[in-house]
Length: 156
Image 1: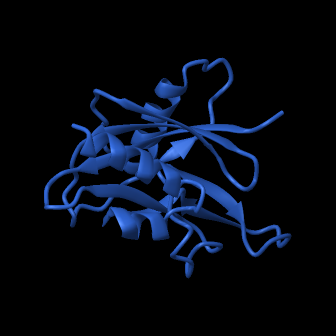
Image 2: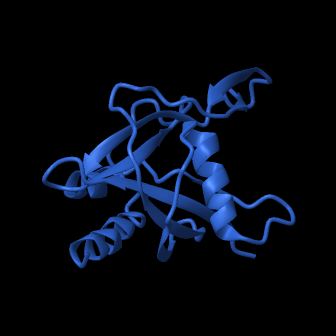
């Protein structure tokens, strides 16, 4: 059975070129990783949660502390290299550049197989990027979502 995930891509038209809000995963695995490791805020459905847009809204709020507000534009799905299918929507919003995000946390065994656990944030930061930079920062399969949204924005 394929893993599913749902997420939101927030964008703003504050400057000449649209900007996209991405998050960087927290924890020691990702500490020194940048290009190709950022993501849209997303997560997996909980048991009995049938509506992917509801999942996307919940996960966005959990990972950023930002309350997303529609309308939401469907971006379709992408399949990541690991086989996970990501359902995505976009919405126009804003978040001050200097305002840190607050997200949920989890316990991770670190170092691996040590029996010791550390408490880490699921996401350690969120930032705005223009389109071409966002595509470099994103997980390579998620970059397609920027292209899809750019086409929607250009046709408005």
